[in-house]
Amino acid sequence: MPGPSPPSSIVLRTPFPSVTLSNGRSMPSVLLGTGASTWMNETSTATMVKNALLAGFPGVDTANHYRNQRGVATGIAAARTAGFDGGLWLQTKVEGCGNSVDERSPVLRDACGEGTLAAFEQNLRELRVPWVDLTLLHSPPCLPGAAWVDHCWGGPGSDPIYPHRANCSAAEPCEMMQQQWLALESVYAAGKSRSIGVSNFCAACLDCIAKVATVTPHVNQVQLHAGMPGADPAGLIGVTQRIGARVQAYRPLAQGGGSLLSDPTVAAIGRAHNKSAAEVALRWVVQLGHALVTSTENVAHMKGDLAIFDWALTDAEMDALVLLDTHPDDPAGGMCVL
Image (tube, rainbow, N blue to C red; front, side, top):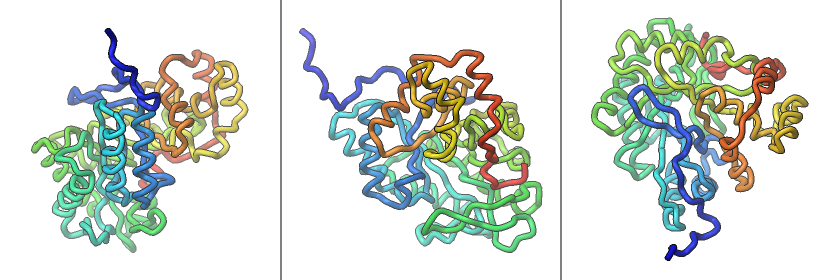
């Protein structure tokens, strides 16, 4: 006799579509991002994470710099209490060295490696886990007033850690990145992070860490969406793939409620498939073979974000989306000189 039906809010688990990393691990093709509307808000983050896992999301992307990782842990625990019993991919990030003055665990110019390790351990404590699936270096380094960067900036109410147009070929930022990368290699060797990678790294940044790396980055998380233009804006996707790293797209909907979702081409393709513009934009990314991170607090939108695997765009539709040149963005987020 079959068992009782699961609660209507719980999604029955089947193997989730994934991409394979160079170390053989399978990373889900879609993850929930926690760096948007719930930035620095533990309560709303917890609610969003719980709802997303119960809606079917297979994992979460977070970061030290979002300052909401305790909310991520609370949301995961609440989802499990409510019946979520699937596998969970959990990934986090450590900010670039130089201008992180976070009192919890700063990552400072003269101690990039040590600071990276301290920030990583802080992530584990806040997430209440002994290890994570993936850790990324969040960006190239930033140091106010340095000749190799224009300026530093950050999210609302947090440290200005992100560089604008950092020159990763310069000696100082390269040494800082190398120290950080070797620190991540050590946590990878210890099994505390099952994979390691980078975010917002352009070709010069990747070339820099390659000089000391014994482990090639498994992932480069970059900005990618239809209309940037092309399938390989600024050639960064090709550079990432040539080193054997997987592309994980953030902001796959561009600015969310912005013009991409009202673009006539995207809207027409959506009507042809009875899909939303958001579903079309997300489908474009995964049909190119990439993984993605997307964020929403709306449960209906969460379910739509996951409804992208049982249909496909035609070759003509893919071409039309690739040729869009109406929503330009820098794939490295303006953080480094490509």
